[in-house]
Image (cartoon, rainbow, N blue to C red; front, side, top):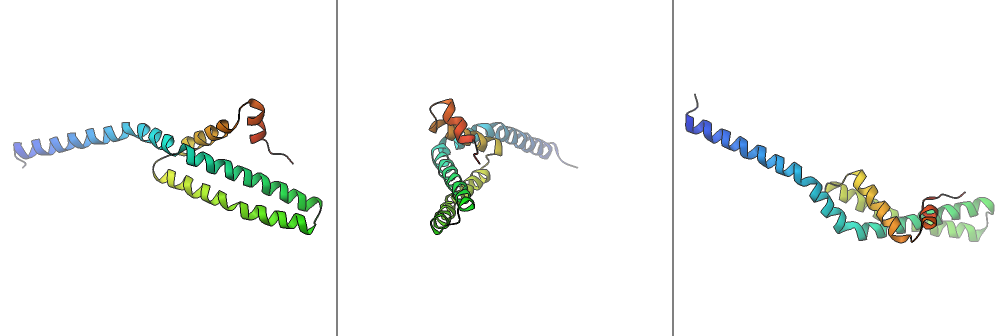
Length: 132
């Protein structure tokens, strides 16, 4: 049987553990907000570069489909190499997820990056629009 002193120690430790877990859980939104603020510029730059690379690749593929010339194929190859920046973007995103950001926070960061580059609604629409 546990003595009264041992029981008080166990209850005290449990109380401290519960308070610690509660504080940790409550501090998660603050931690995520700090991560978002700190990494927004670098992440936004990668979002923009990857978006441009994907757009260039799509246009190069369409150029090859229209006219299969050596110049168009060379442009497509260059556009495929340009997609390497999307790998950097993906790795950066995975690192942010390991630090605790969820997909919703990353989506917000992407939208903020796109909106930062756009001065009016037409630019936002053209950024999100995929043209065929």
